[in-house]
Image 1 (cartoon, rainbow, N blue to C red):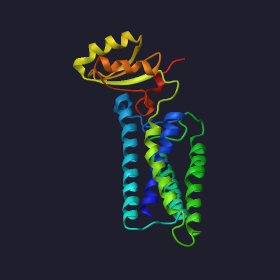
Image 2 (cartoon, rainbow, N blue to C red):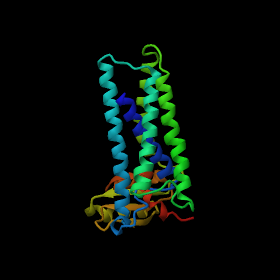
Image 3 (cartoon, rainbow, N blue to C red):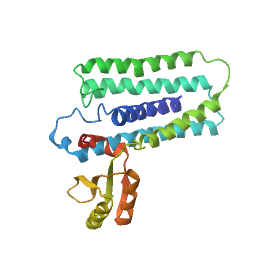
Length: 247
């Protein structure tokens, strides 16, 4: 039961992170917080990264619980496992609405909407209440033994394993990359940027983290030959820098 709940909960977080933070860019985790320290781009990036890391952790605990049950010969029915996952998926959105949206106010569903509450309620009904109710109904309709349990467990595990990596895929039209480099290699990195005819959009004062505009994301791989430790166009790293995009 807890394996299904945890995997569904993690998938709910991945769903929000991929769709709302990265694809639609309706909000980011701390976009509703006006505190001065949180206006720092580095803090916004860190908060989004920690959110994804938390979802990874919850998914791994769910996978471990599922593997442990399988080792003990406990195989739930496919309907029950799917029902538990739907309850967990809905629980994430219900908790997000109650705590993040209304209690803490750190973000809302569509931050640029003139009617924030309407979007919150629609999202809560569609992805919180509806899946949770469907999960309860599906779970209560379970009959017989563990029919379909193994395929359902495999499918749910695969969804959880792929949820995070899919969220890290860069958009096809990505023209920005985040680059991590040793500060001592910064000049060498800038020489590489000049070779691919890129431009600097933002840089950390330490000289360790940079954001470049590039003509093609695949060209950015050449920066590894100029001291870069990590080059990524992932929206998980760049999501909060979307405001730097120009026409």
